[in-house]
Length: 250
Image 1 (spheres, rainbow, N blue to C red):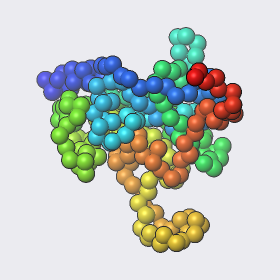
Image 2: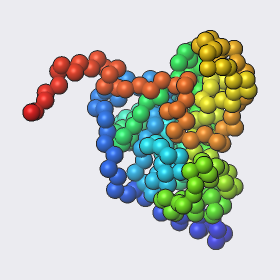
Image 3: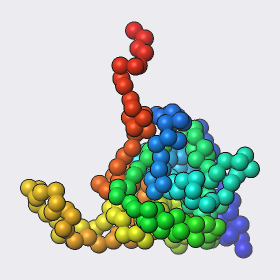
């Protein structure tokens, strides 16, 4: 009982927002017009735990959400805005959100290529089936490691530090939920390659290589950015950027 109480207090503390100097690099309108169902929205978080995650993963991104779109049949918020995102939250569990929840955050869109309508439907069904799942936060160590925003851990051990503990808090913090969704349709993120082609191999060799699925608990938000199978989408460019239209002040 005491450990659960202490864990809840730790979660509340780690989830508290702090001052963040990140800058949104695309207009809100461009993001709305560009994002598509199946896209992964990476977020530069502004909470205490976000700082630790960014340090441990050596990345700008501390959080990831899956965009399912307005036709996914998710709930509608009190403001009347449709929920279009599904994410795993340390405190609330797996939940749906409107896109505007991250309106003021620095974000990045990572897009899987070649998904069919059936693939999107499978992702949607899986995500909706997980809504409401709560994580077991009883392991205090699994949470306490994030109290230090920049723990004195050698670079080569920082990623593995995320996998320590009972597991559930790590699964909520990392991108386990989204990784499982893509693994359900056999879409690669960063699979383990069993037979590595030579540097001179042609591009098609990669498609004939053998891969092994990486365990879903080992994924972090930065992996979608680093993955060669996800395209980084720049909303400003996608909406027809013309540098000649910029107004420069000399």
